[in-house]
Length: 514
Ligand code: IFG
Image (cartoon, rainbow, N blue to C red; front, side, top):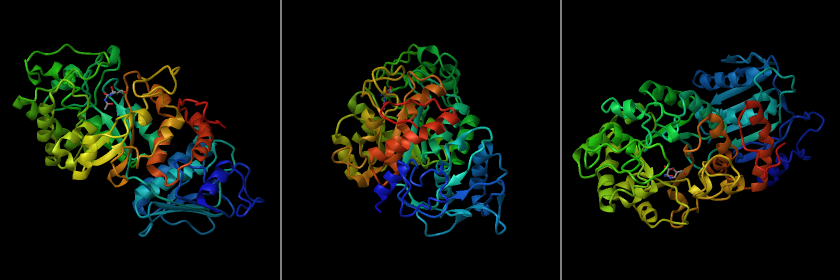
């Protein structure tokens, strides 16, 4: 039976006559294909596995962290000990994590007495564990022990990502979100195999990351009252940032820091007036206008500033990318913008990282070794198409499909609507491989779902705008198959999991929430 039909049937939880063993299939068994993002291959069959108080998690030392995290995730709702062991004794029900060559992504096999997740890397095992969590009844996300038949449907899943870069973005500048809020968001996006979190760390309103060589950036522009409407100030110390990098890495999420230049710099210029051409500090800004600020591209101090910031941020960042913005430089003359990018893009490589920027950087020849993040609403962009021919890679985050700060409908209390109104179907209704005419699929390394925080103050606000659209973008980044009917059915059955997790998601009328 074809994969698509299998998933569809599974998603509508019809027992597959050919393979399910009705006698043993537990009534609450989640169909094997009912996973977001949709797995590549799903082969249901055989008796379900059952989690019991005697279940152990078997893992080699290199998979110990993933095993312990799985145990932590399952303990609250089951109340079982679920110890991690090197080798399970026979006749003990076991969830075995195994590392070995020759597996692309992960392979999950579920039989009556044993679940095996096999991968070539610990990250692959982590991805398999996220799938396993969704194959257990929704009650598994409860915070207190539940009396449930913890059955997992029998069968095999072979799964691996379509794109290497599947990102989310949080705007820390317009409103500062605390490290704990960012960690909570990391937990929530990791469930959908999102593997990058782009943090927008500076803008006109505030500067949100400590820089030792330019201390007034946070001393003056990182304090309380520097958020939009004077609410939501704050900043990440280097210790906070390192802790976030570590926390994210343990969930196979890589942090991408963004320092937006040459525009979006009012906060930096309030702290250091020498960064303006006339040396006069501009007034602090807590409104939401954009495009009015620019570094003074003719002054050498500007490039010392850029290099110092890139150097310090690179030293803090384990991941491969540093994002240097480049958007809405409306106060920078085009020739000056080009000169600035030509000098600053190479600084990222100088400190061992890959330059990443909003797609306007594509005008600069130095962007041939960079990643351009498409945020347009149009069908194409001439500079980007030309840059791709020189080697520029692309992350797709079209503002009229992937911007999670866009309202769902005109009645949405939070968010903006300048790009589009984006309901769940709109967030799912595009193809990264063909979204920009002239940018071939081979140049696309992935997708990202930016969440700008002009109107978002709390984690509940973030969750309301991110869920359920982020899973749609995550599926476009991961899955080999595309089916709105299948996705919306799987999303509908995911709702109860968000309820148990206490996630403040938007109950879109486009989805049948079970
Ligand atoms: N555009 C700006 C963001 C933010 C956004 C809100 C980009 C690249 C509008 N730049 O998106 O700073 O204000 O939707």
